[in-house]
Length: 371
Ligand SMILES: C[S@@+](CC[C@H](N)C(=O)[O-])C[C@H]1O[C@@H](n2cnc3c(N)ncnc32)[C@H](O)[C@@H]1O
Image 1 (tube, rainbow, N blue to C red):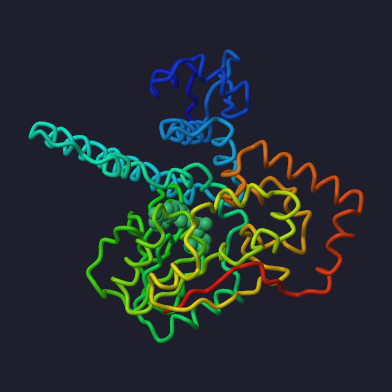
Image 2 (cartoon, rainbow, N blue to C red; image 1 turned 135 degrees about the horizontal axis):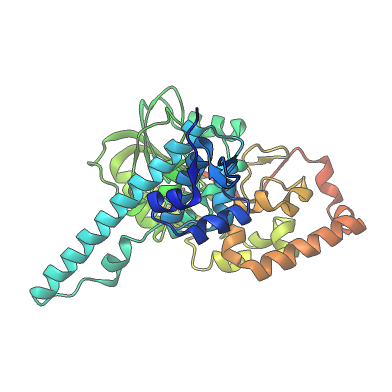
């Protein structure tokens, strides 16, 4: 017979209060599904399994509503969820160890009368944005085959490829030996089983010898790097060939290329203040920039992907997988979405953007840098 545990026994074993368990029950997060002989609620094996997962995510600092999404995720089975959890826990352990090492270093430096630099003090906390938004990423972000084709062609005959800012592994070629670099634990934990090995590091300081790869690639990531030029130089240093998919924010009128930033979200411009020019970026790798048109049915849900499918931007899960929406802040986001919803309803959007219907691909400033 299956063993059932009382609320008190579960609380004792798990080291949480009975009140916490009642709260989880009340909000539907973990419901004890069994009954004792006396009619009291009791935890069956499946309930305990779910509670174990919830408590682990709690320890990792996730909020209850995020946890509900994670444990109810219909796309993953128990083993996949345990793998994701394990990855996050291992990462937290490593991150804590790195922080302890950082503090030890600072104590040592202070004892000798030195001060660590602000950069050194902050480095251990890097990639916070994707710790926040990363779990929403796989819902809409995936390889767009037509863009992948361009990237893989630009990789030429490279056999060993470094993918910097690799995220969950989109665009990684399967017919070459890939090594991934990704600073965010949340993103690393979501790499599918069998994905290329992934190293925890930032682009600005790649832990590899000079020229150790045939090629290095970076897709939709360099705008997140604290110092993109330094990161590109690092790619150049470790690889003979460099391929980067990025965004041109230096051509005059760049904010007006896309109706979303032109008419609804001008705050996008503020995010790229101080962003290096195309010339600076191409110079950092010693290469050239080629335009990449975005197909109307682009499979990878990046910011510009839905340019001919405006209703998509009304969807919360579409926005959550794109850092722009988190970076502009909730006020700008809500205003932009409300205005777009109204314009779609009134026909104003369709009228103002009627030329788009005839286009199968659009030039929205996406570029492939190749060196
Ligand atoms: C929009 S995602 C792109 C992921 C993947 N390349 C793709 O195309 O799906 C941006 C990624 O850049 C990573 N990132 C942020 N700062 C970074 C840095 N300094 N060096 C390398 N990657 C970084 C983020 O953690 C995130 O996974």
